[in-house]
Length: 428
Ligand code: HAM
Image (tube, rainbow, N blue to C red; front, side, top):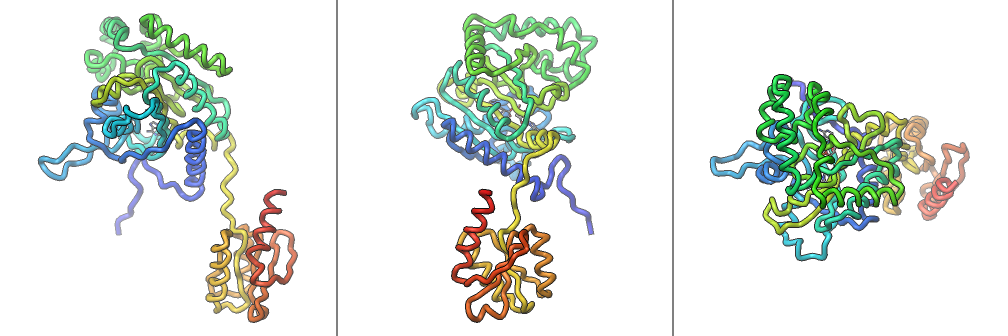
């Protein structure tokens, strides 16, 4: 028999990990709703051109990491798994004429993304993002609001020490002159550039700044900085974003080398890091303004901004910092019985409790009562409902496994009794 394994770079999220992820997904959805974002779901795959055009042909994400699906016929569309949600959401915004709705249209999604990255801790080929997008707002106030929303997510998730790195990457008015300057700088260093970067120099010089090649770090540190070459409008926008953040009391670090790995960004760009871990290129999340993307994907010119938070990395950071309280999966009650063979009675009573909204389980193994009670204890159950001779008269024994007490309860009152006991237990 072959030994099957999960594909390289993917993980099975076993119940504890899945519960931790679920908690973060619920937190994201609740927070987004608090800030006025409405949920949207787009397909996990799109025409590859949505990403090629949206994210950019000459980016790591499209050039090296796109999961392209093999076409089924000669004529078939070229599909790709989504490496990120923004391009698909903007595609949907255009397709469904959302520019006719009151602007901004504020959308949120949470789900798996796919990148054929080199797998390592915190870098997976299937990973989860919590994403928000405010489409149709030129900022700068919403830029600050979105950064604050990101920080609130980490704070409520329980991750401490999250730092904001902030930059402006300019716009089509000022960027061409800057990229020309940048290209001239790197051409002067051509002999020192790794081959892949030399190749990109003439095709998309900005991407050299977010190269993952360690050989580039020193060269990039000395490169001309976009913030010294912003046009007046971009400089004013950037100053105002910072003033809004200052007014909210949000600390951030201006990082002139921060350009992000996707081509669609204009003006505001930001990333979230656990302090001291920036060097490992393991951002917990990132985002920025993308004022040209709606038009690039066929819509009217529409300003927009958003972020994506990596939930796998957030969960890792949480675990490293001591972790969040695990979800309480223990049943309130386990139904056990003196008659090992009477699984019908046990199942019937557990069904009754679950229909009443209680977290209950029946012991369906045909084993001695003592064994059933031991298993209930191992499950962390608060109560055991013991079925015995009294059942014929509608009576059961309710044993509090934590207090070690036991009393008789009428079957008709059982659900109510358990709900009451559980509520007073929870509230102290
Ligand atoms: P991104 O920076 O490419 O931005 O990804 C956002 C976050 O996803 C990263 O900061 C990281 O936490 C997580 N992430 C990325 N790749 C991986 C991976 N291979 N394994 C684990 N986690 C990963 C975007 O995707 C943009 N769509 C964000 C955005 C939304 N900009 C505007 N709106």
